[in-house]
Image 1 (cartoon, rainbow, N blue to C red):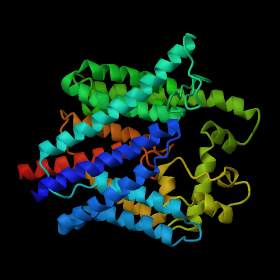
Image 2 (image 1 turned 90 degrees about the vertical axis):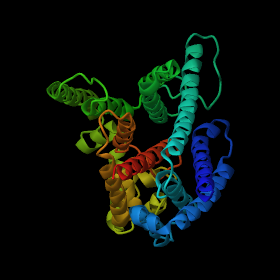
Image 3 (image 1 turned 60 degrees about the horizontal axis):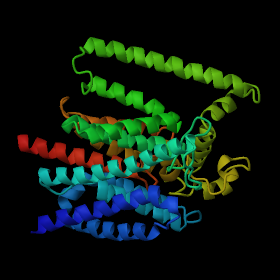
Image 4 (image 1 turned 45 degrees about the vertical axis):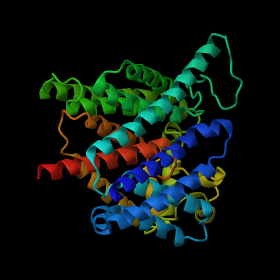
Length: 422
């Protein structure tokens, strides 16, 4: 009875966390305040986390010590920088803890069938939500282009300058959510060949192509190479053939990047002869973001400047021309590793990498014919995309939920299967 009740409450906690994550994407379209749903999710998550820890405290500490270390590092990064910390620092901490303790961690024993049903419900829910957003964006764009109907609404951005942001109102977000919807639809389509999932894949693929998201346009072919290398796609190819295709793809990708770089670089050289500024403009000011954030890390190397404190710390520590001082309340370094270093220092970054090793080590032994490898490839794609964005941590959106939830599910499933064999 106790285990059944715990499993039911775990589902409730995760579903509310998912709803809260989706609200960041959908409710903002109508300027609806999602804070009440967020705080309700926090309350439910706290009850669940305490229950989970007390349910089997020995097992929890044994398997989840990297997560505990990272949580403590995030907390200490805030309290050791009280002069810059405010309520939003603690809200960011609450987000981190929710995704760790509710979505990622699975210390207790569960039945595999119940775990799979929960996973299917959550991921199908995300497929439907992202499909509705992408299909709606494409439909409104088609009607607008044909001059049949134009929705004059500030929350929809039509195709302009090679970018369709649609209902997402941001090209990068459109690309990221399109990628999630595409990969999750493909994951289930491989298993049951449902035509509705195939339509979802087409819609999401078109959304990615039109989004103008350079990150996702690079990530998608890399994920295809990962799936081919794993034998998930093009299964009849020999190892030698796969190797040759991978080499050609890598070389072709480098040539394409160099060609685009030279073309854009020539344009930027006209206004600035500094190589640094040429690269910075090509990367969307990311070099400035990274270098300025690293300056903060070097000033406070052990615990960083604290969660959500980059803008406040920049006012005291960085020169007048810093990008974080120029842009009001700007916080996003657009790189998870740089963000970890600036926010949590060496302590938090080391703990985060320990978590990564724990999950990578567990999932390395998945069989090649296992469709779960598609989920792993998706997570790899998100991690690669995170090198030029901040997708997987320090925000409250669907990609964070998907990444942590999928890794937690795969880790527990693999552990349960290993224990069954033993």
